[in-house]
Amino acid sequence: SSSSSSSNNTPHNNSSSLSQLLSSPLLFTPGSLPLSQLSTLRHCHADPSIYRNHFKEKDTRRVPYSEKHNLAYLMLPKSGSSTGRFMMKHEFDAVERQVKLEPPMNSIAFVRDPLSRFYSQYDEAYVRTAPWHNVQNPYYAKDDENDDGENNKIKSNNRKRKSATGSLPHPFPYLYDNLHSYHDYEDVFCPKHTRSNPNSNRECTFAQTKENGTLASRLERFVRDYDGRSPYDIHLALQVPLLSNAKDGRAIHVTELYNTTDAGREWHAIAERYLGDDATWLQNAKKEKMAGTKESHGGVIQGRSYPRRLDVSLVGREAERRIVELALLDYCCLNFPLPKTIAEEVDGRTDLNCKMDYDGGTVRIQPAIFPDTAIK
Image (tube, rainbow, N blue to C red; front, side, top):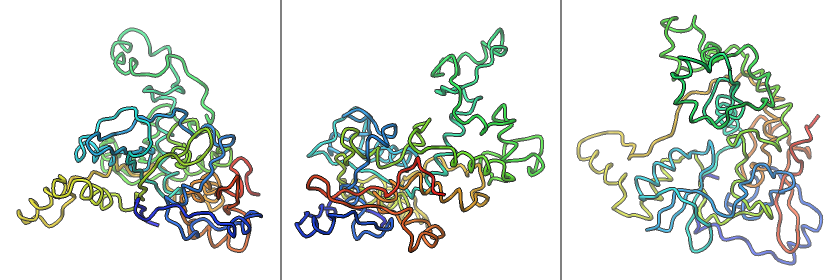
């Protein structure tokens, strides 16, 4: 399912026949419900006792908000938030502020395929929590020898932005074995012998990864060890809890839900619907057409488009399956289909499925298994 708007996401009324049908839990394959993503989310239950550390605890959210249009954009890490921020600011004159999400406010969010998102989440968390990264990193490994004299003066600005002067032990320290700096890390995904100039790292920022499996094998070990309940960085949080209430695990007030697969087109449609001919992207597109420009991006940015640092083609089937298991809540509650290779493996079996039952007068969708129990 590619997108869901408020016009086609009216929750289905529960009937007595549905109650009887669901008197015993009904198992189904992720992505198989004849519902939009938003309708599926509205029936979801993200158990707070299991996913507690994935939720935002406060009743209010800090979001880009357009007072003129009473429109809020819910930012989900690694789900197109850079594009969303840009569009809300430049199209809707939105400012980031604390708001309580409730009617009649319009609130929109974008969600992303869980497997693709997990790889991006991991890449982001890997760098942000690396022992050499000293900006808002509780796991920064402070080197006292480098905190004196001239080095102290040189690094003072960075140190002021640091979240802590001491460091917490990283929960997965083996991820950084034999890596002591970003340059060491860079040498893994952009080895010197692969560069046009071995003495320069200029091309590494946007170069496709050339890692030899070192980073992929560390991800494989991580997903075996990670319980799925305790994300040590916000970028590892699942999408559904961020769209749900921490008290009861039910969906918060979301009126429109879209997929990042076609974020540019979706944002254009949103701007045109709210702003009509005043939409900046539409004006820019008309100007570019008059000027004879063949290709128009309409002012939509695609965020930070650095290539992945680990080579996902080197990640084994077992690890990929474990990632799906860890993200099963997002697959079930956002009606995303399983990756094709995993779906073929699961067909006819009861694992990696979703569960629908009837709880207290309402339909409840959730994973059939929870992430701390690895499938053998």
